[in-house]
Amino acid sequence: MSAVANPATVGECLRVGAGFSQGDRNWIATQFATLDARLAGFHADATELEVSVKDREARGQKVTLECWIAGRQKIVTTSSEEDLHAALNDVRDDLRRRLNDSKTKQEPRHNKHLRDTGQVGASLDEVDLDVDALRVDAERA
Image 1 (cartoon, one colour):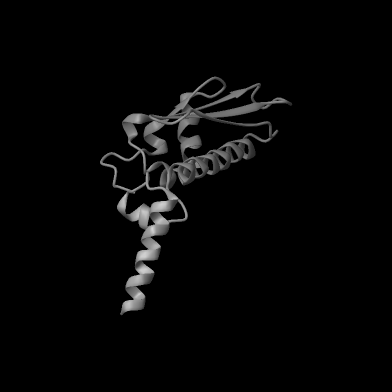
Image 2: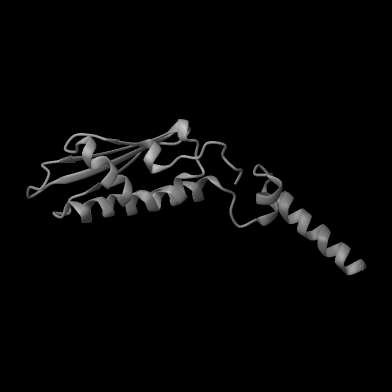
């Protein structure tokens, strides 16, 4: 992955929505700090996070974490945990998993040659021909 000039961080991209105050922002950013490593591959200008809670500290509260990254679909994670701390950890971990899944879907798999050279559009037939050519060269040696 290429280096990003201005990597996204939770501290830079996080907004607090309904149910939270600006005073809660630093506490939440600390809870979400482990997302920084995953967000670092995206530009800060093109990344937004928003966390909100419905019916805070009441039975049936719902915490929602939304993530917008330019060029990707919006990711929404929710938790109905009764403990606010546990709910924040739940949405954080779910977002990390979904970001990892999203990254995996966009990268070439099962072919190191295609990943290294960027030939994502190569067909399997072309790859098979390259392997056969390498075998012939190896037999001659």
